[in-house]
Figure 1 (cartoon, helix red, strand yellow):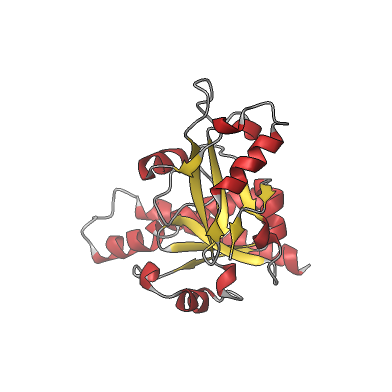
Figure 2: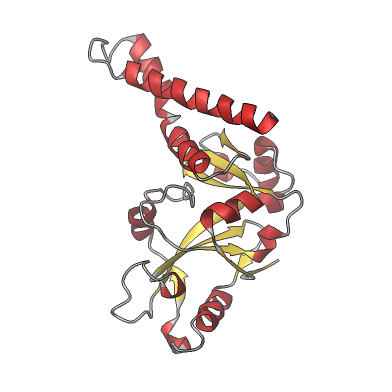
Length: 230
């Protein structure tokens, strides 16, 4: 009953925001008036949240929440970020990075083959040290060794490529609502967090998204790989 009430609350909130956005775009209101300026500011900051909430709810995700942070958030210590988000620990703070296989054969140019994609999104903790070699070994094994190991060389994709593929800027990348259906790799360490609720980018630099790990896995259907160290 509580989960149903929570769903109804979120859906009502989304509908109200859509209504506010539509009202703010009516041509009868001067864009220079104090009212229209405040309305635009109120709705602009929620458009991404509404879109991602709709996607998550439509895919059965119920335990998630957004938190808008200050513009200097990334100048803060991990402890300060933990506190403002209400995260359980600094280990629950995660990021999504786009990797490109720089040695992929010329016929591998997109993400149509999950097992041998040109690009992957990897979700790792801020406190962990990402190890690209483990991803390389995982993909080699995933393809039953039929593709030479030298054909896997995972590197951080250029920022312009990441933006083009995901639709999100640096520090705002999330696995929800990406422009391209990029296969996701979730670091195994995140699945062992207690409580199982972690934070990652929310589609905007100053918007963060917290989600139940089990629901994230059901939604994103990631490959779970031990790809980091302390």
